[in-house]
Length: 375
Image (tube, rainbow, N blue to C red; front, side, top):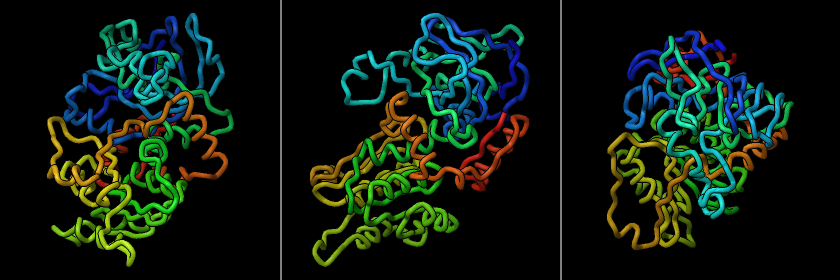
């Protein structure tokens, strides 16, 4: 069938909005009509050419929501008419990783997903008879897409697509990093580096966890108001602190009873390896944990003095906030619908597919938290 899509023809070039061909679902697959999709920094990372695993031509997009319109043979967990969120981190519930209960990183389709194809090794998208690559197993920059059954989360039908699509990545990644990866306890002192879409959701998660001190760090003073809106208690402009940022943050967290200082938990949402080091070193001696969320450029490495780790600080990484997609995403949709978390204020721009390149311009200019394409 013919569908409308934004095609990434080559690295560094604007997306080409055009008509492409989509084949129907095969065994264990579903076709979803995408109703809305967010534009995430990860899409920009791949489009820029910085992603070493980036494949072209491809249909990008991984933060969507829509309706199942067709199911292939053997599909049992969803049916035509179900509302779903595509999952770039699937949940098969059968592979060693899923069964371990120690990670959310399902390996059932990881190999083919990274090759830009469906589990059988072929693509469902083509243009002029030539294959187009899938992206992160989702390709939500098309108004219809085909996904493995294990890569869709069934959600309630009264949830607005143009808001809950954000749960497909940004919301779940930020909140999940707090609740699943760090397991922040009430009363904790926390620092969030980078107050973009992910950072603001980390702050939301810290508010849910009843953290006592939530410090936001950014180089843009405009982010102060955003952070406070979602629960931030203190703001620090990293440029104002200069080379003394870590010392400044440690001093902020000192009390009369604890003159060592340092955060119980820090979160890097920048992807900057220098900031990752600062985040670790701003942790409390003996028990501080630093969670890396931001994606660093290809080939980048993190460094610190071994003393920082020997004295009890811990570095952790997280993907999709440690969430098990089919299990956890519907719960987060419920939290939104029940008013426990906010999404609407972070959707700063909406546009039709024809204007999708404007979303990337807004992102580059720092004028958006999240832009959403509504089909």
